[in-house]
Amino acid sequence: MDKFEKLNAVAAPMPLVNIDTDMIIPKIFLKTIKRSGLGVNLFDEMRYNRDGTEIEDFVLNKPQYRAAEILVAGDNFGCGSSREHAPWAIADFGIKCVISTSFADIFFNNCFKNGILPIVLPQEQVDLLMADAEKGSNARMTVDLEAQEITTSEGEVIKFDVDEFKKHCLLNGLDDIGLTMEKAGSIDTFEAAAAQSRPWV
Image 1 (cartoon, one colour):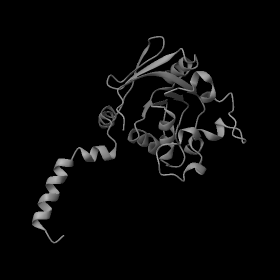
Image 2: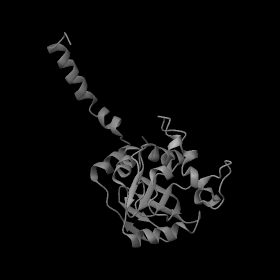
Image 3: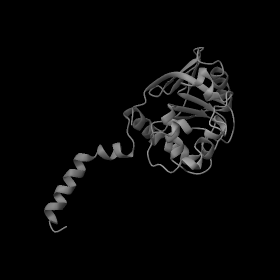
């Protein structure tokens, strides 16, 4: 998992509330267990017509937001089923940070496990960032995880809270496997001692 330290990027505005995981990645795409390749189907039903052509007025299809790495979203983002494919699709598209007033708990935790920083802010601050994102590709925001600050295109700074352990994992690029591998020395020592005391196992 890549480290998340400081991100300076275009932010896409998506003010719709209650965006659920089926809207993020429809169930027809859940057949794979690979984390890659799902970005093309992110927000599939909102992004494409039935014949596969793009819906021009969908935010991520607009030229100024095609390379967005930040998503400023409406309330209760990631609700619905607990599919981990939702953060997989978001990450595969290239979005590294999602900002909202609230997230569904399972989706929120899955984001951290997949290198995405979900940020919870009061409505008035989300509104400010939404307005900044609506300016297009010339308005880039900076998200500094170490300092726990978002800087708007106008230079306004907004502080945010993040769990210290989750912050540590993102800063160091540690998912569940990475956290386990940090203990590799202790695991090897335990296994060697166990093999010596119980050679029949």
